[in-house]
Length: 465
Ligand code: SAH
Ligand code: SF4
Ligand code: F3S
Image (cartoon, rainbow, N blue to C red; front, side, top):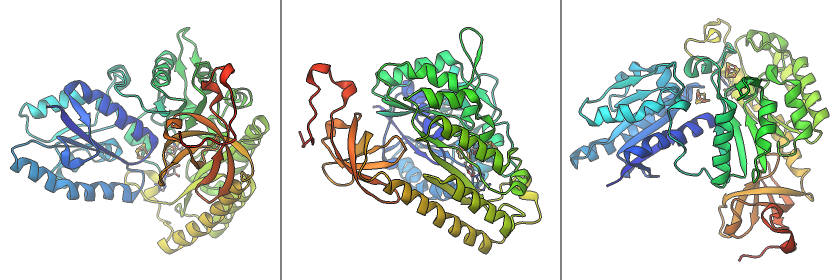
């Protein structure tokens, strides 16, 4: 009987990609994925450590899942519990002590060793394996090829780790040092994804624009050059990348946005704060004006570019006037959408030790004010699309029957009535309504790229086939 694998993923898109690759690594052992943990022989929680609540959620989830293990044991079945990702990396052995239900703890850089770890556990080595190494070998060289297509919008990790050490952040400790995959491996993986039906690929990295990968001519390529190369792949219509750091936006990347229409006009470029004093304490190594200059250069190259960002409010020592600088920067840049968080002290990071922590009430007030402003900008950006025609890559069924959900070039979620066979296709859609988090529209054309010239008829509306 095939064994069942249940993976629950927390945190960033790199974790989403890693979960897909863990399933690939376990496929040769006979594990097929299930959506139901009650049905599983192996449960993996792929965790995130970025803020306090993230790790607490993992412990409570483990508590909730515990009865499943007891039920399986009563049936004479062995149900394995694994914890992966950044909490696993940070907690290591401690995780086994705090949650004795766990059999296996492994970090983001060791999941290529999963088959070996699982074989040892099933072979009677009991429980309690921990592997939080930063091995010299790269997991990418030891993972099998992708076993199942990811669908029309796929993720591809090109870079991992971070050497920036922002003073609030755990990522350099949980993911390790910066590493870029070679160009050839990335191109081959992208070609396989496209052959499997991907029309859009999002390149991933904790610092994706710090990418510096080796090409076959031994030259080192930056992200701009890599994007241009990937844009040559036939059938691939859209490229995105995330997350970028302002310091690594170079002229080559800006030029790629200018010249390459497959690079979508949307960029997540976190600034964290608008105050130079806070930015310096955060060790971001850029000022508010540096960021404004980068945004101007990008918008000169691609006037259609929509921007997104991350913000932290209540960083230790942040005063009202610092926060006012953040609001000023937001007003000037004008974001299409953004994420904002209250500062959360992370054990072992320099900022956690600063005496001057901001009271919770102040953090709450600042977060509410920032989110109010960002929400207004997002709604205005979405409303400006009403009455316009735009392309949408349909990815999945909508909530109501007969509806599909897709994404605009600017990452907006777009709902439209369309037959299911259009999932995976890029359609022209007339936008008719806008809310803060989504657009609604009407499909107008068939996917040109997928039709031969002869049958390019343009129905004014596609009715359910
Ligand atoms: N590599 C990306 C971000 C990775 S973490 C970058 O450099 O921007 C994603 C976001 O989580 C960060 O941008 C930051 O806004 C937020 N974050 C990270 N550590 C945090 C902390 N200790 N408290 C609150 N938010 C945090
Ligand atoms: Fe964290 Fe800063 Fe690295 Fe981003 S650049 S992952 S915020 S340390
Ligand atoms: Fe979280 Fe680790 Fe990603 S801490 S945000 S899962 S890199």
